Length: 250
Image (cartoon, rainbow, N blue to C red; front, side, top):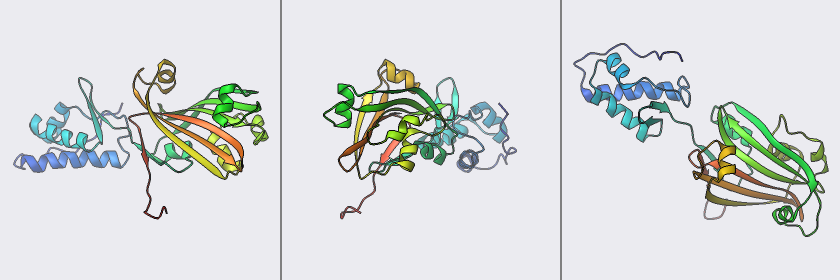
């Protein structure tokens, strides 16, 4: 890791309040400009004290303010790190995971855990809201933002409505992105739940078992025909759902 370049020491007569504000401003600028990316370990308190020629209390005041604003995370015995950005998504929209990740300045990568074509099980039919068995494509995949798992996807695609999906490997394009670009839909439904990760889900998301997660379950139809049913799981500390609306519903 390259050592961070910080300003030269300032006038020792500068007031503590002004100096603390300058330290905070300097660190904010490096974070917001992208110079210090999410996960970057910022200089320890002793380094900041030497650089700015000030007491630990002055440095600590700046770091406390940065942590309160959500820009950094302070970890006991480990130091302070640039926070991972929160993702915001409208509750009523069909979101594009790849676009979500790229919108927060992270490198997107897709990992297909499994891809199976099969005759629908009873559980599959319940998810698709159909009464008779039909061919489906079941896809499990992980969406990564940098080195961190952004989301885990459990998707069913109805091959009666979308037969071309059987030819798509989804190695380079996420299932949701491909469906948005190739399959028209007329109706969708979102269901949102908070839950704690079990052993399987925690392994997929790279989090501790029992940690908080967000599940967004979505179904889409074209007329009366189901297209897909998907469950997206997100680590609870990295996702926020937002809906903006007026009294008239616009």
